[in-house]
Length: 306
Image (cartoon, rainbow, N blue to C red; front, top):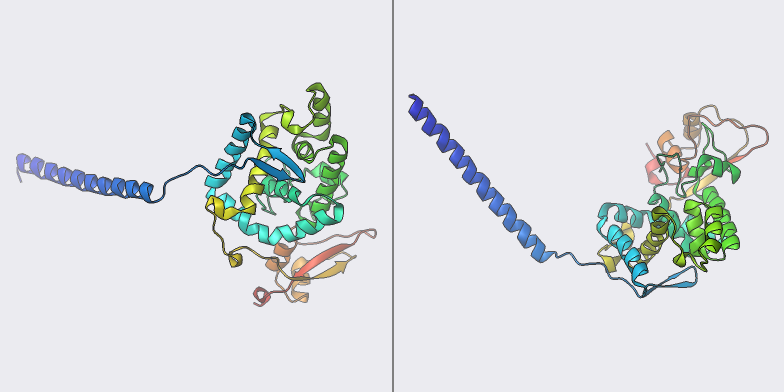
């Protein structure tokens, strides 16, 4: 084949490929345009006010409305995260709601928990906060939770929720407002209490704090509004699509378990199910001194059959 012929052949191949790519691109652009027509993006609805822990939070102030709108947009279009939060609420909210009732904390505080961890019970932050309520190790120990290499009760939903409720209730008693108590959970009770008189503020919504803390409370409010009516924001879940509470029996133990895999088999389940039901068990053993007792959940479910 002469050089001229070879050159013409190569040009033909390139031209054909370019045409094919243009055709594919045109088809894609057409499909994308059609999708935009069929599925237009619309801004999420913003209410005139939000009821939170018995207080009416009005959003007719333009600054407050924009802060709320920002967080509502994030949750509405963060589909994968928001769907996970909604689904997991079916599993964790019943346990959390019981603890809130028992400690006298408003039910709406559960949305703080959902915002903190996205209801990921195994969540660990870069600064080592852990669990659904994202307790720091020292704060957890000060609240009476055990945190060591073998046991970390920040991953025990019931115990961690009670500890979080006590902290938030103490903040409310000092600050006199649940929204301010939520801000204190993020930035510290002393800081909010110090800034309130300095800024001559009667409410959190009159305060200027750090960007993170300012957003924190509005994220809780936005998540409450969305989770109470998810279909209004495009999240359509059937009741059976929510995750559910896992049924379980409990076993109290007050002596060391040297091998949790053996313990699991002795109770008719496997090691994986034991650790899933008790994520606070952090190693393959459970050392216990004479002064302590733990309660271990034993799942009751078909999946425990090998």
